[in-house]
Length: 353
Image (tube, rainbow, N blue to C red; front, side):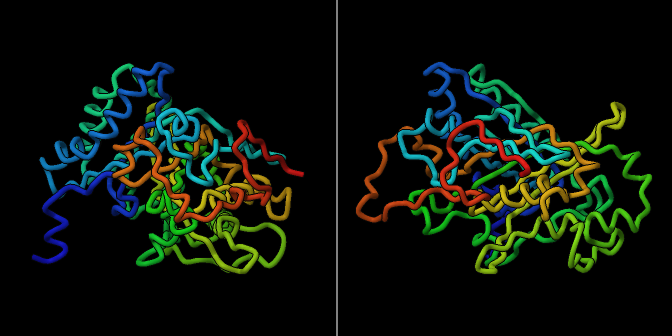
């Protein structure tokens, strides 16, 4: 049996951050009710998630159903007796002079992916049945793959995703936080687009904003001064000159009858600060005041940060914390995009200065 044959025999397991990009997805964000019973119901549902994915996914193995669960910082403290992942904190408000990345509520994120929309729907339905009144849905988006992975603005989205060995190195926590190795930080934002205004721009103008050609998806040269493209502002290089990637699984969504057109951004990262610094460069600008011109055509309606733990940790959230003191050196303060240490206070606002 080849490796590919083996992969076809079973649905993709939950918490498979590196699962293939799919044709359909549901992004479900919920908050947890304040009662102890609600926490017990959530723990039970998360512990049973593996079985639920198999129950639905086994009906069409080619559908490649998967589901990743992210847990917000406040929910982590309620659900688990463990210390929290080193960088986990609420998503900060990032305010530039023109545009603001908002911070919105969310205790749990369910990122459901499959090659078939009905598989995503069925898993979401059964999952919400299991959770019952323990949760309240605060955002629910059905995404779809649009032609050759294009967004509704007409450009290919996700070309810069890491591949091969770079994928886990960029998206999964490693030895820097061994108690949570194999997990991933997740940030989601729901953007809407005024397509009429975007379509009024010339193709050359659109390409200058994005930093790629529209038809061929070829990178344009970086600007040496002045206004930078979206591609350039979203490229993160640390003080040592090392580039840090994230894994995007963005999807378009929309309801033409209601004039709604959007992109659901979802980024998985080994380090939360990488995504935050990317958003700071977009909203505040680099140089300051020179924001990403894509934001003139993309309005963020939500913004929430989560941590997706390894699968075995989901079912043991309320177990006693393992004693890792003999194996783990004392953690340094959590890094942030601004390099100002721990950011666990909420809300956190970052403004253009």
